[in-house]
Image 1 (spheres, rainbow, N blue to C red):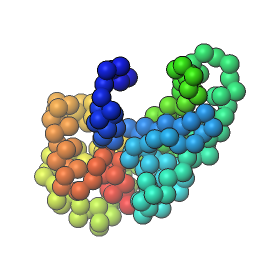
Image 2 (image 1 turned 90 degrees about the vertical axis):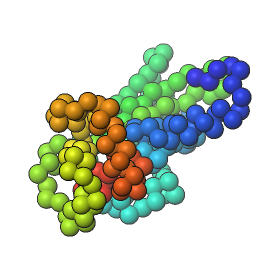
Image 3 (image 1 turned 180 degrees about the vertical axis):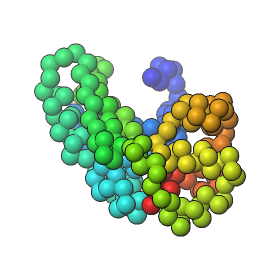
Length: 197
Protein backbone atom coordinates (compact mmCIF):
# COMPACT_ATOMS: atom_id res chain seq x y z
CA UNK A 1 0.00 0.00 0.00
CA UNK A 2 1.36 3.41 -0.92
CA UNK A 3 1.86 5.91 1.86
CA UNK A 4 -0.68 8.78 1.51
CA UNK A 5 2.16 11.32 1.16
CA UNK A 6 4.08 9.31 -1.43
CA UNK A 7 5.20 11.24 -4.47
CA UNK A 8 4.11 9.98 -7.93
CA UNK A 9 7.67 8.79 -8.84
CA UNK A 10 7.42 6.33 -5.95
CA UNK A 11 4.83 4.40 -7.97
CA UNK A 12 7.42 3.88 -10.72
CA UNK A 13 9.84 2.44 -8.16
CA UNK A 14 7.15 0.15 -6.73
CA UNK A 15 6.26 -1.14 -10.20
CA UNK A 16 9.95 -1.73 -11.02
CA UNK A 17 10.35 -3.63 -7.76
CA UNK A 18 7.27 -5.79 -8.46
CA UNK A 19 8.67 -6.61 -11.90
CA UNK A 20 11.55 -8.48 -10.26
CA UNK A 21 9.63 -10.65 -7.79
CA UNK A 22 9.88 -14.38 -8.61
CA UNK A 23 6.10 -14.89 -8.70
CA UNK A 24 3.63 -13.83 -11.35
CA UNK A 25 1.44 -10.88 -10.38
CA UNK A 26 -1.60 -9.96 -12.42
CA UNK A 27 -4.24 -7.29 -11.80
CA UNK A 28 -7.56 -7.53 -13.67
CA UNK A 29 -10.44 -5.09 -13.63
CA UNK A 30 -13.96 -6.18 -12.63
CA UNK A 31 -14.61 -7.21 -16.26
CA UNK A 32 -11.54 -9.48 -16.38
CA UNK A 33 -9.38 -7.14 -18.50
CA UNK A 34 -5.69 -6.82 -17.57
CA UNK A 35 -4.70 -3.60 -15.81
CA UNK A 36 -1.11 -4.60 -14.97
CA UNK A 37 1.11 -7.70 -14.95
CA UNK A 38 4.79 -8.47 -14.40
CA UNK A 39 7.13 -10.57 -16.55
CA UNK A 40 6.63 -13.76 -14.52
CA UNK A 41 2.86 -13.47 -15.00
CA UNK A 42 3.33 -13.00 -18.75
CA UNK A 43 5.47 -16.16 -18.93
CA UNK A 44 3.07 -18.23 -16.80
CA UNK A 45 0.07 -17.11 -18.89
CA UNK A 46 1.96 -17.92 -22.10
CA UNK A 47 2.59 -21.47 -20.85
CA UNK A 48 -1.06 -21.75 -19.76
CA UNK A 49 -2.29 -20.59 -23.17
CA UNK A 50 0.24 -22.22 -25.52
CA UNK A 51 2.12 -24.95 -23.64
CA UNK A 52 5.73 -24.81 -22.52
CA UNK A 53 7.43 -25.46 -25.85
CA UNK A 54 5.49 -22.81 -27.80
CA UNK A 55 5.61 -20.33 -24.91
CA UNK A 56 9.43 -20.49 -24.86
CA UNK A 57 9.47 -19.20 -28.45
CA UNK A 58 7.08 -16.30 -27.79
CA UNK A 59 7.67 -12.81 -26.52
CA UNK A 60 5.31 -13.33 -23.60
CA UNK A 61 4.60 -9.63 -22.97
CA UNK A 62 3.75 -8.91 -26.61
CA UNK A 63 1.37 -11.85 -26.93
CA UNK A 64 -0.17 -11.55 -23.45
CA UNK A 65 -3.67 -12.97 -23.02
CA UNK A 66 -5.45 -13.95 -19.82
CA UNK A 67 -6.00 -17.75 -19.87
CA UNK A 68 -9.63 -18.81 -20.21
CA UNK A 69 -9.38 -20.88 -16.99
CA UNK A 70 -8.52 -17.70 -15.05
CA UNK A 71 -11.22 -15.63 -16.78
CA UNK A 72 -13.83 -18.27 -15.91
CA UNK A 73 -12.62 -18.45 -12.29
CA UNK A 74 -12.91 -14.65 -12.01
CA UNK A 75 -16.51 -14.80 -13.31
CA UNK A 76 -17.37 -17.46 -10.72
CA UNK A 77 -15.67 -15.46 -7.97
CA UNK A 78 -17.57 -12.29 -8.89
CA UNK A 79 -20.85 -14.21 -8.64
CA UNK A 80 -20.10 -15.32 -5.05
CA UNK A 81 -21.47 -13.21 -2.21
CA UNK A 82 -18.70 -13.75 0.38
CA UNK A 83 -16.89 -10.62 1.69
CA UNK A 84 -13.36 -11.48 0.46
CA UNK A 85 -13.71 -14.39 -1.96
CA UNK A 86 -10.61 -16.34 -3.03
CA UNK A 87 -10.24 -19.12 -5.59
CA UNK A 88 -7.33 -21.38 -6.56
CA UNK A 89 -6.99 -22.69 -10.11
CA UNK A 90 -4.35 -25.28 -11.03
CA UNK A 91 -3.08 -27.13 -14.07
CA UNK A 92 -0.99 -29.75 -12.28
CA UNK A 93 0.25 -31.42 -15.45
CA UNK A 94 2.12 -28.22 -16.37
CA UNK A 95 2.88 -27.05 -12.82
CA UNK A 96 0.68 -23.94 -13.09
CA UNK A 97 -1.19 -22.53 -10.12
CA UNK A 98 -3.16 -19.31 -9.64
CA UNK A 99 -4.55 -17.79 -6.45
CA UNK A 100 -7.28 -15.30 -7.32
CA UNK A 101 -8.71 -12.82 -4.85
CA UNK A 102 -11.49 -10.32 -5.54
CA UNK A 103 -10.62 -7.10 -3.76
CA UNK A 104 -13.46 -4.73 -2.96
CA UNK A 105 -13.22 -1.21 -4.26
CA UNK A 106 -11.71 1.47 -2.03
CA UNK A 107 -14.01 4.48 -2.19
CA UNK A 108 -15.90 4.73 -5.46
CA UNK A 109 -13.46 2.67 -7.56
CA UNK A 110 -14.51 -0.62 -9.12
CA UNK A 111 -13.37 -3.90 -7.51
CA UNK A 112 -10.38 -5.71 -9.02
CA UNK A 113 -8.98 -9.23 -9.18
CA UNK A 114 -5.53 -9.73 -7.64
CA UNK A 115 -3.91 -12.88 -9.05
CA UNK A 116 -0.69 -14.61 -7.99
CA UNK A 117 0.65 -17.06 -10.56
CA UNK A 118 3.13 -19.82 -9.78
CA UNK A 119 4.75 -21.86 -12.53
CA UNK A 120 6.75 -24.90 -11.41
CA UNK A 121 7.42 -27.98 -13.47
CA UNK A 122 5.97 -31.11 -11.90
CA UNK A 123 8.54 -32.94 -9.79
CA UNK A 124 7.88 -36.16 -11.71
CA UNK A 125 9.92 -34.59 -14.53
CA UNK A 126 13.20 -34.78 -12.55
CA UNK A 127 14.75 -37.57 -14.58
CA UNK A 128 14.01 -36.07 -17.98
CA UNK A 129 17.17 -36.06 -20.08
CA UNK A 130 18.83 -32.71 -20.77
CA UNK A 131 18.93 -31.47 -24.35
CA UNK A 132 22.30 -30.54 -25.91
CA UNK A 133 21.26 -26.87 -25.66
CA UNK A 134 20.56 -27.20 -21.93
CA UNK A 135 23.93 -28.91 -21.41
CA UNK A 136 25.64 -26.01 -23.22
CA UNK A 137 23.87 -23.52 -20.92
CA UNK A 138 24.87 -25.45 -17.81
CA UNK A 139 28.50 -25.41 -19.01
CA UNK A 140 28.49 -21.62 -18.41
CA UNK A 141 27.87 -22.18 -14.68
CA UNK A 142 30.09 -23.30 -11.83
CA UNK A 143 29.46 -26.73 -10.32
CA UNK A 144 27.58 -25.27 -7.34
CA UNK A 145 25.49 -23.04 -9.63
CA UNK A 146 24.64 -26.08 -11.78
CA UNK A 147 23.35 -27.88 -8.70
CA UNK A 148 21.04 -24.93 -7.98
CA UNK A 149 19.97 -24.56 -11.63
CA UNK A 150 19.03 -28.25 -11.85
CA UNK A 151 16.81 -27.88 -8.80
CA UNK A 152 15.20 -24.79 -10.31
CA UNK A 153 14.54 -26.97 -13.36
CA UNK A 154 12.75 -29.43 -11.05
CA UNK A 155 10.52 -26.69 -9.64
CA UNK A 156 12.02 -26.41 -6.15
CA UNK A 157 11.73 -23.15 -4.23
CA UNK A 158 14.69 -21.38 -2.64
CA UNK A 159 14.07 -22.82 0.84
CA UNK A 160 13.73 -26.34 -0.59
CA UNK A 161 16.96 -25.99 -2.58
CA UNK A 162 18.77 -24.67 0.50
CA UNK A 163 17.56 -27.60 2.61
CA UNK A 164 18.41 -30.19 -0.03
CA UNK A 165 21.92 -28.80 -0.68
CA UNK A 166 22.52 -27.91 2.98
CA UNK A 167 23.25 -24.27 2.19
CA UNK A 168 21.70 -21.11 3.55
CA UNK A 169 18.79 -19.51 1.64
CA UNK A 170 20.95 -16.38 1.25
CA UNK A 171 23.66 -18.44 -0.47
CA UNK A 172 21.05 -19.92 -2.82
CA UNK A 173 19.72 -16.43 -3.63
CA UNK A 174 23.26 -15.25 -4.40
CA UNK A 175 23.85 -18.25 -6.65
CA UNK A 176 20.49 -17.66 -8.39
CA UNK A 177 21.51 -14.06 -9.12
CA UNK A 178 24.77 -15.35 -10.67
CA UNK A 179 22.83 -17.91 -12.74
CA UNK A 180 20.42 -15.24 -14.02
CA UNK A 181 23.35 -13.01 -15.02
CA UNK A 182 25.31 -15.78 -16.76
CA UNK A 183 22.27 -17.05 -18.67
CA UNK A 184 20.99 -13.51 -19.40
CA UNK A 185 17.56 -14.17 -17.91
CA UNK A 186 15.41 -12.29 -15.39
CA UNK A 187 13.90 -15.07 -13.35
CA UNK A 188 13.76 -18.71 -12.37
CA UNK A 189 10.81 -19.46 -14.66
CA UNK A 190 12.99 -18.68 -17.66
CA UNK A 191 15.85 -20.81 -16.27
CA UNK A 192 13.45 -23.75 -15.92
CA UNK A 193 12.10 -23.21 -19.44
CA UNK A 194 15.61 -23.10 -20.97
CA UNK A 195 16.75 -26.24 -19.16
CA UNK A 196 13.56 -28.15 -20.04
CA UNK A 197 13.62 -27.50 -23.79
